[in-house]
Amino acid sequence: MTDRLHAYRAKRDLAVTPEPDDGRSSGPGKRGVPAEGECTDASRFVVHEHHARRLHWDLRLERDGVLVSWAVPRGIPPDPRENHLAVHVEDHPLSYIDFEGEIPEGEYGAGPVHVWDRGTYETHKFREDEVMVTFRGERLRGRYVLFRTRGEDWMVHRMDPPEDPDYQPMPEELRPMLASLSPELPTADGAFAHEIKWDGVRALAFCSGGRVRLANRTGRDVTGRYPEVRGLGEALGSRAVVLDGEVVAFDEHGRPSFQRLQSRMHLASDSAVRRRAREVPVHYVAFDLLYLDGRSTVDEPYERRRELLAGLELSGPAWQAPAHHRGDGQAVLEASRAQGLEGIVAKRLDSVYEPGRRSSAWLKIKNHRSETLVVGGWMPGTGSRRGRIGSLLVGFRETPGGELRYAGRVGTGFTERELARLWELLEPLARAESPFGGRTPPREARFVEPHLVAEVAFAEWTHAHTLRQPSYKGLRDDVEPDDVVLDPEALGA
Image (cartoon, helix red, strand yellow):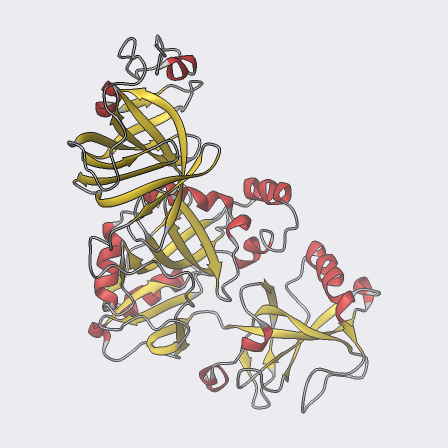
């Protein structure tokens, strides 16, 4: 007779771990393999949520005196359009069906374990390479099949339609809604809520199965650049969520700093990312909720989306969901000025979310004027900057993909390290002809392909649409150059 729990015991010190041991459990019991389409009497199952080195779920089926077990990294799929990996692991004792607790550090599977769901199941097939069952739990219900693909790797597939007939799969891609620039607060103050305008990089967070994927405004995956935000996925557990927010770096006074965030962009290796993450940590600031557990929320009013977001209670070492303020726009704006912040955003309480669109339902009111502009060249430096970049030549478009118009030179705001980095980025982009239409830069200008985008602070626009007192804040990597279109309000403000 084979000891079915030998592998289970061999991996654990049962004198140290609180995990149970049922004593000896021997080989095949009396149950045979059911015929095609035949159901056996209901047996028990449990799904554990296991916060080990990486969050996963353990599916365990009562069978022949043990719990036959699979580790499912992304959880049990609720929709037949999704298949999830399930790794077959050692059999567990029957008493494990009620186990919850903390497996000690240093032990196999160290970390908290709790019951995600339990109930009974009916067997339709139970073969060495295929298991088909119907679950009857509180959260897990319906017919599923597990099938072996290679070695101990299996897949788990839902055979029934989603239990919720209105279930919507999580979108794979969305574009963030954009705010229109406004020189003043909206007059209908009570119809708006007000938020801080964060001086960071916009990112949508796609969270499911304990994992998180960050996508910037262009849809590019930037998860690897901000590893400290990955814990957000584990904090949300089995919940499926799409968040809108910004990746922010704070200065020594607790204020968002786009310049500090610069050092976290354009890194070429994982080791560089880890090193900079220790030096300049970032936070993910969530301010909107676009999808929640099988439901798109983009057509819900802003006020309802914020209620749902608050219900997630997002508060962690590198993520937060700051409060919004209904009404009181003037007070919020004055407080942002007093704290030296970039400004605020006013959002209509009844507004839906418009992916990829700039809407007047969201208004940004800035304390310090800045714009996203395209770099089209540079001027040679003089004095201490002789032989290096003296200033950047920047421009804007009035329509997507339209003519690049010259907006002036930006010669302040650079660190020595940033000047060296800009030289490395611009040198390969050199071109002979000016990328600017209409008014052209000075004769000494050096031109480049307009592939880089910079954030520039300034005092005002002149009547000739040239920047006054511009200062460099940093490069942006979340905006494509052809998409840099100046809001008409910016020129008129």
